[in-house]
Image (spheres, rainbow, N blue to C red):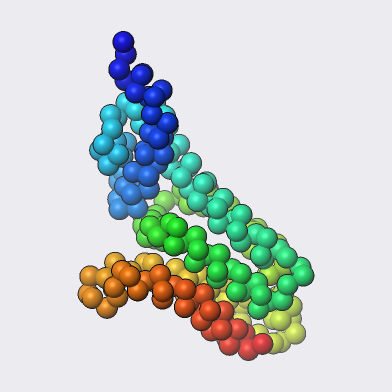
Length: 208
């Protein structure tokens, strides 16, 4: 009997095990430096199984990124396209959803930074051309404030500030832990506090 084929068919968790391992390796090494054998070693499975399920490193990366981006877009799009909510309500919704996603995927910010620094063209392929933000009601509300002279800077600064305030704690987390500034058990509490604080900071910049 073919043991490898039997194992493949009998273990439905193998695919997710490979994807979990790939997330870890891609985050630590970046897309370019990652080899399929690294993922197999992290998952503690045979290299042939990785190739059986995903065929190539690029396909595995695409699946992981598509899955993560879909989670983000599915949460954010209803918030920023809702024409019945105020700008303040949208800002609170964006912050809350981003932070929830990152609590579920804390490795994502470091992975994205690694890919950006490497000059990879994989992220632009997965994140689209910016239409999600530019065509949203949220963007139109910011543009209206700019047209009325209520904000005297490019509206994209608001989105950049939101992203910076949301993402940086996750990027800085390893250093904060190593230096003893932050304890693991306090991190989630701090993120919950930031769900309330970040919207207040952003609104104060807009001066609504």
